[in-house]
Image (cartoon, rainbow, N blue to C red; front, side, top):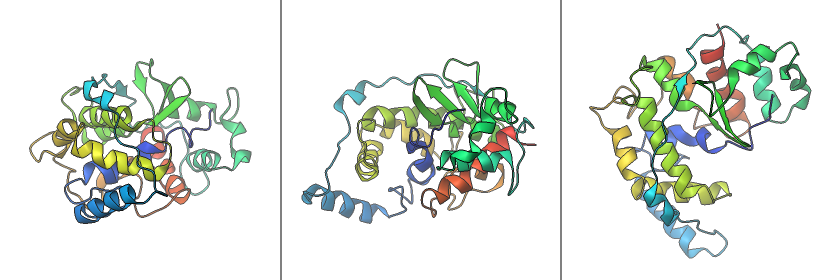
Length: 247
């Protein structure tokens, strides 16, 4: 079991940045007018460094996502006191909760469901590429929308392509503020072709594009944009873990 909350913060902002682009252009929930002002203010403020999208991302080529593990694996307990909650608490600094997820320990099977590698045939909740980890929101979405097997023509695959472009364009930006500005510029520029497919009202993501609040099974796939870290992860991780790896 590996602590990943510092390795994969960007996917935790995916709902605000991608699925609500038509009404929300900044992960924190500002309008397009506010976004323009924010970018302008940041560019003029020497104390707010701007990290622009990497020009090299113009040559970005999507890599295929792997099939997600089916939902409801029944390998993690859920609830206020549960393996899903303990895993989230471990990731947000309560290290006393971590040891149980190590190989051979009581929650090892739960951890094995949650964690996967990019080379695995199926992906769990978190996907590792060496030391880098990302949340498998796109796989969760395909599970929730019943689109597993429809890849590459699935909502999850379109999200995966857009996330990948944003990572390529802004992966060098370390500060949250810098990344948010870069990400907004990327989805309006170099990554727009990928994001437009996500936003299409006739495409695979049509069922969830534009929803102010995700509902149904897909709600488990996304963090609550009204919450701040670590509360956001402590709320969201148990939900996405519970959907994929719980009963």
